[in-house]
Each structure stands twice: as structure tokens, then as C-alpha cells.
Length: 452
Image (cartoon, rainbow, N blue to C red):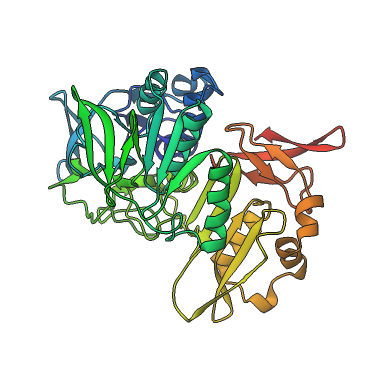
């Protein structure tokens, strides 16, 4: 039987392992992870830092998951090189490991700061459980935090610190929040939510230098000469694929691993999935994308020929405000136009982006109940004139935001999912945050989520 080796024990690697085991009950599957913890729920790390959930709630699988599925999980194992010719991996402990099929699902790592003083103690990110434990431990002795980087990581760190009682200042590099993803109306709703939670926004700001004493961070100096006192600097500058170990392997890379629609690299026995894969859009990083790519790659490693056709999606929350960007959410150019509502209505904003009357992108803020239907429009490049009028009405008529559907909790990550009016018992729903699929069941006149 073939030996499948998976680099990475995150969502992409875990989902791939499950898919391989489902297709091949007797295959040998080895998972190598530099992390010291089994698969955990990264979307809940901020809640762990803020004390809203305990450590046990982060576990994404039961303790016997690996033994039940005959998965050889090796934690704390760093891969230093790949010899694709001999099909062997070099490990940091000086040993090597053979493989027949290899999946690169090593994820991404936060972009480092490059300003003077970036080596001071007090720089923090929130990508791993170790990061979360470090941040949680530091909050007890901190009062002021500066956050830099308009990203999901930046927002989550701002929320975790603010909900822990710290004063939070958020530096925006331009006049508004995340212009690559959000237009003015969507950014305004996000900024208002931050300010309603007492986060101070500083616009057109960047850090020129970090200063400290005794090796500890004390201040940051911004581009306009302002001095901001802080005990911690939360870095949410984005992610870069963690693929340095692939140098000289012959596996094609650019900013990430290059793959085709089957998640295959330039080598037929090497696949890649998740944040290690080359981006095609600013929306490409994320839990749901990694979940879907991992499942598809795992199936294809065993001989399936499934194509990855999902459009780029960013799904997140800003202090409880649901936000989803799909496809080309904020493109520039006269060839694009949009249909949207007045965001002043009920604090909800919905926009469809059109090019030559085809739906090529969308923004949903405050109500993402019709996200699946909108994603389908973007994926199929639907002509706006042929969109179901009932869907258009649900998108742009505020009456439906206030009266239709209901909210259910994802049974895995506890994300609140608003259902559309057409939802009924027996429907299969995919959580936009963790990617878990579950079935709707009726109980006491309400719809509830049941894991499939």
C-alpha cells in the first residue's frame, strides 16, 4: 500500500487525511507537524485569549481521532528539505522519511515587521495556539496595545485585547480600513463597530520605529512623529506561505506552492493545499478555503479527479459584525458597476459587483444569510438579469433582514449563521468559518444544527 505523508496538522492536512482514509482504509498515513498540539480550532483562538472559552474547547477532534483513523501523527516535527527524486523528506532531528505521495499543507506564517526595534520583546501575533497562550499570558501585565495590519488576524487581536480590558489603538495605513477588500460603505460599518467597542483608530499611520527599555517594548513612533505608549504591539500584517524547506526540491513555487485545479504541483505525486498554496486573490487565505482544498487534495491523492472551483471568499467577524467578501469585492475600473443598498438601513450592507452584466463579486456586511446563493452567482458568473427576483429582494429589501430566517450556531466553532427564508429541515449547511458540514433538524418549531 502507498505511504501518504502530509506536512501540516491544520485544517487542510486534517481534512486531507480524513479523505485519504475514507478512500483507502489500509493505506499508511503519516502527518508531520511543527506544532506541538493536535488539530485545533484557529477561529476560536481570540475567544480563548479573551477568556470566553477554555483550552479544551479548542480541540477540533476527539482524543482518539488519530488512533481510530490509524493516523501516525508526529508533533513537534520540522521538515527541512524535500528530495523529490528519491521521495524522501529530511527532518530537523537528522532523520529522513520516505513517501509515495506528499501533501504540502504547512500553512502560512505571519509577515514580520521590518522597522527598527521590531526585535523588542512585546511583538505578538495570533496564528497558533502557542501565540494565543503567549498573548493571554501577557495581558495580565499589559494596559495599552497597538494593532497594526488590516487583516483577520489584526481584527481578532484587537477584539481579544479589548474584551480583556486593555486600551487598543488600531493603526490604519490609509484613510479607511482594508481598501483592497472593502469599499467605503463596508469599511464605514466595520470602523463604526470598532469605535463602538472603544477601539481608537489612527488613519494614514505607519510605524517608523519601536522603542523600549531593558529589551521590552515601551513606545512606537508613527510616520507623523507621534509617540504611542504601548505594552504590546499586535502584528496583523498578513501571511506568507511557510515553504522555505522546499528550496532546491524541484517543486514549483512563487510566493507559494503552484498547483493546478486538482491541487497537484508540477510533480504528479506531490500536492498542496491551504495557506501554503500560491494566492490568486487577497481573499485566498482562510480556514474555509484550506478545509475545502485539503478535502479535495486528499481525494485526488488516492486517484480521484475532483476540480477545485470555489471562488475566493473571506469570511470573518469584526466584534460580532458578520462580514463576507466574495470574488472581486472591491475592484477598480470603469468596466465594473455595482448594485447595493443604503448601508444606513439597519446597519446592513449588501453589494453585488458586475462586469458586463455578470456577477463577479459581492460584499455582505451585517447579514450573510444568503452567502451560499451569492457565492453561486459569482462562481457561475450569472447574468444579473437572470438572477432570481426573490434572491434580489432578500439581498436589498431591509424588511427581509429584520424578519426572515433565523440564526443558528455552528456545532463546531459556534459561529452564528443566519439562514435564508428557504432553509428547511434536512438541508445541509456549510459553516463559512470552520467549513464543517451539518444538517438542519427541526426541534420545537425551530431549526437546529446537527453534525453529519
